[in-house]
Amino acid sequence: MRIGIISLVAAYVLSQFYRAFLAVLTPALSTDLGATPEDLASASGLWFLIFAAMQIPVGAALDSIGPRKTAAGLFALGGAGGAAVFALAQTPGHISIAMALIGIGCSPVLMAAYFIFARVYPAAVFATLAGATIGFGSLGNIVSSAPTAWAVEAFGWRGTMWGLSALTLVVALLVWLTVRDPEKVISEHRGSVLDLLKMPVIWPILAMMLVNYAPAAGLRGLWAGPYTRDVFGADAGMIGSVTLVMSLAMVAGNFAYGPLDRLFKTRKWLIFIGNLMGAVAIFALYAVADQNIWLSAALLAVIGAAGASFPVIVAHGRAFFPPHLTGRGVTLLNLFGIGGVGVMQMVTGRIFKAASGPDVAAAAPYQTLFAFFGVLVLCGLAAYLFAKDRTD
Image 1 (tube, one colour):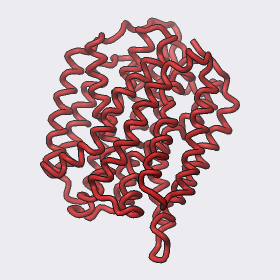
Image 2: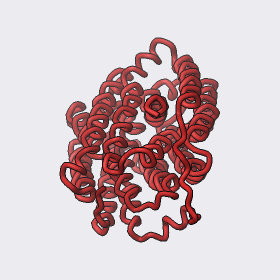
Image 3: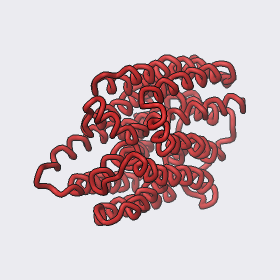
Image 4: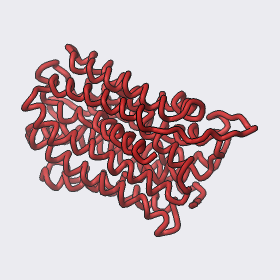
């Protein structure tokens, strides 16, 4: 099982990479394909929306056919195939198609690991294991920053994508060969996602999940590149450095959050205070958006670290799910988390376009985005106040 988990973590590294690498490719795709920030916002948002929509069938597949076939099959067909389509792209529309396919491929990877954790390991360590998985997987965030900028300079963006397609196929094969499915839960009770949605206790948790990951994912995966380029004149190398700082902070945040629910004997208030700190950092970035690139990078790092409470929110929700609906439960939470990012990517693209203009300061459209993200998190926190705390 350990080797299988390692294979799933390797796949998740690539999943994290694919959701964040567009920021570094912004200059090259703009030059070669004429892709605008709005085009890339739509493509990135499509990845998240398709990924989110896949959580319903993925959850059913995990409960019925198991994580091995679900993860390996989709990752090979969607992940490797989508990367190949990306390498062949001739228009911004082709980029969107490729990102949709990659979203399908990446959709089962993290949830396959979480399914195994929930079914095989003690409930008390779920948050720690879940956080560690995202922490190690966040190496993909790191690789999608400065290292990707170097690879693009050395091999071109098409050559880089062909290499990623081959690597994705190899990892999918490893998942197929090494992952073992947990024993199926035999239950006289049948159920679906609708049964989970009939539980009012999870509604505030879903509200928090909806907004938690959106600022960090949106800024790291999409807007950090255009923001530092337009406001500070950053080139691909500098964009890679800034996103690397934020990526490292997100890795640290995931490792830090995991064991803290056991240390402080609470999940609700750990999540609440962490995301409140993230909201404060977002509004601080709004206030100093055009002052200094490294000050902005530091605030982006705080936003990334504070917003890394995703695994603890999953652990909070999982504590209320019946065993025979474990797969559907964790994927429902993931649907809200990733779906929230996808919707916000689409929305922020339109907000940016509406706030831009020839007579508008370079930082102004980005300040509008930062304000939007800050208010969004505060709304989620208001709903989460009504959540019931539970630890294992």
